Length: 163
Length: 207
Image 1 (cartoon, one colour):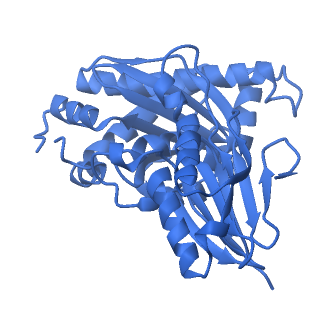
Image 2 (cartoon, each protein chain N blue to C red):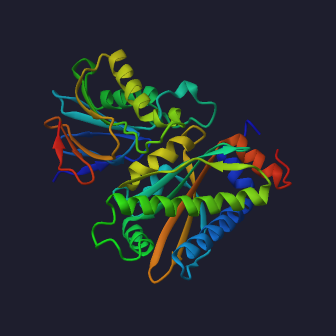
């Protein structure tokens, strides 16, 4: 029996096929799914903020940030036998949940900045992004299967998509 | 104060924050009751500092559909505020406020959501007003924005704001009743400097 492992907000987990991995209700956060197709080791990070270096204090949780979270996820996957040179990624989330007329622009942009920081980190680690479903103004629940690399995405009032 | 984390602020001033939340929610319910022109009873609000991972669970799971009203706060303090209400409660409120004009099932169309935004505006306004009166600080809300989505997705917005300071979120849960039981949540998100201003203005020593 395979199981689906749950990743919370500002959290990350790894799994090995046939298990899957999920995170529920991504908003402006980004779900970063990484997989090694050879070993079928997968991982999912639910990152909240783009950059750990811009934070003053209380940033003990590496999973919270795109920069540190992705590095930690890759390290944990390597411990399970995954090879970085084979890793590929899919990303989802980074929505702008509330749109304001004028004002509060910096807050509105956090989803987009999370996506940009995620892409920059993956590029730095030379992990290609095979597909993405990012931006827009709605939340997403994602399920990732390291067996096939399928990344299932559900949103309220929309039919499920697979990228 | 700049070195204090949200956790320390909350631990040291838990009773104060709880009381502020209590009075704020009380005022919000009075405003709601006037708007609905009926009696609205409320339970003593729960003020909690929760890890991000627990917040969704508390609201019935990250995928629970909720209505979120979000607005900025300007003036002497800066930050933002959110009011969340569970889907069925929101539908009930919308039907009530539109006095049965909307057929069941159409609550989340344009007119209903516009009415809900107004409800959110009035109750967050009343909440902030009481905070302003107690602290003698100028607190100006910006026009609200509204969304209907999964709890987790909506909560990512205040969580990200809190995430800058720590890994927990300060949540005020207020249960209220008219004919049915409704669950509403207030999340006030002042930046840390504003916490200091609020506490100082109440005459509390801020370390």
